[in-house]
Image (cartoon, rainbow, N blue to C red):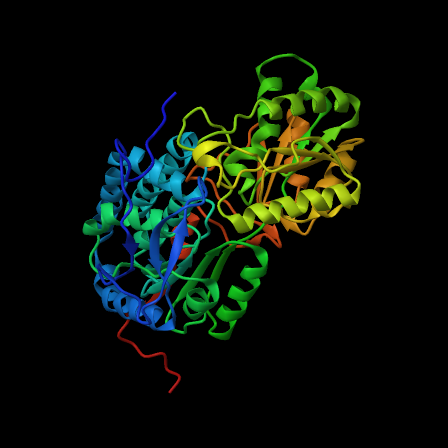
Length: 507
């Protein structure tokens, strides 16, 4: 067990600055209107820094800087851009523990997750797109002996990126790595709940980037996010967040005919077929862990497996064991490596989750474990903690249909394969899904039948850089990760060249 010291205290690996302005043109600047907002830690509910409250004027300054830097960065040879991304990855890795503490303190998630998942994945994304960039090639087509069509990949220019609060550093990496590799400059708006960890990371890597290539404007959605997303000066908008906000982003983009990437909400089904219980072995144990994955990152994951569908034959046996496994999830101080579930990211989110727990009770769902605010003592008394909660009910209930974004799973049974697919697909969302079975035919058929952009089979919550991630239905447009994302941040230039001196003879 390791217990990291809180930022800025004796023995701490890092300390936050008292204030963070906007990062524009390679330097920190104060907000134009002189307004700041407090940033509390969900660990104890106490304010630990202040952040610039951005407005349209700040967005315009950032866009000015990004446009000034765009031509030179876009012309930088691919090998040099790749090298910059590799240096960013190396620098991030050198400070992995300090960054893990920084993100945990701001977001509330257990440090065991930031150490083992968030930061290693962020590092890998920079390295992956550095490699993909070096391997990318254009093409040519010889139309006839005198005519050739050349195809070149060119950057879009200045792109807007708006990231959520559930994975501040990983979401920044998901967005920045392909955009920078493709030769774009960026104006990034972090979530108002978690801007400081992004700035702490930026302070470690900013010297590796030319001024203006990455700009960060803080603030609230209406005041800073809307001016950025609705600006005709951006060539693309990439957004991760809730579906209702995604609709607004798409509307803003449509007014200026700008492309969008939207990674939105989910209500992911996790299917457990009877045969998974047939043998008491590692796979059964892994499936029980897969059930408990609804509590990863306090359930604040778009692909949270928040609907568990269990085949009726072994329903009781599996559910009893799954509830028992859930009760083993250890709450505690997020900076303790033994802690399995930390604090919700904000007081607002805490209240939302508890309101859904009350809604589930009113709908007639049965609480099998949890269902209350987690009361912790001492320095954690003011933090935002919720017990992992297992409901048993019916897929028509709102707790089955609406995204709660907390450590809450709703369980029901299915009769056979067709019934499982019907229930799983009976939702407006289609981001992720899980299938647990020993039968390869069942796994394949279910994977193809489920309406989800990613289907995990006998695993869950893996996010490698070389695997496309994104949603069906109301869960979004476009993909994150995978080499295809490089082209999402580029446009194709076609040169159609005639090498013949002879005219066509038409005029």
